[in-house]
Image (cartoon, rainbow, N blue to C red; front, side, top):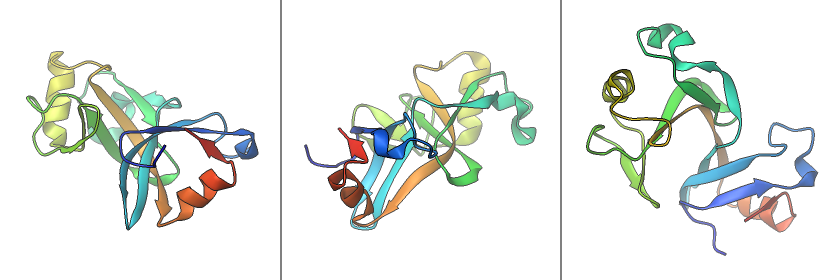
Length: 141
């Protein structure tokens, strides 16, 4: 299988003891500059409303998206009808979008956790890095 946006990779035993132990990652960008993805199976341990800048939001689960840029919140969603500005990726998903509209959709019940996922941080690899890690057996499809 070729590496591309929209696929999932899973960590293997060589990553035990690291941040990536027992993780599943959804690849959201893959190009000549590198690869970006989000860990999809690791809860962050806090809810959206517990973050100071989102204390006006209703409780909503946060995922630990990865070790890079943990000062920012990232969104994946399936609701372009409610959230403007997202970049379409495969499988009916959109990356990013207007965060005020995300919060509004969550606060009004217009969207649910099956339609929106929020991540603290992301996973990133420079060009060729993830391919090398796949080749050495750290990840599998």
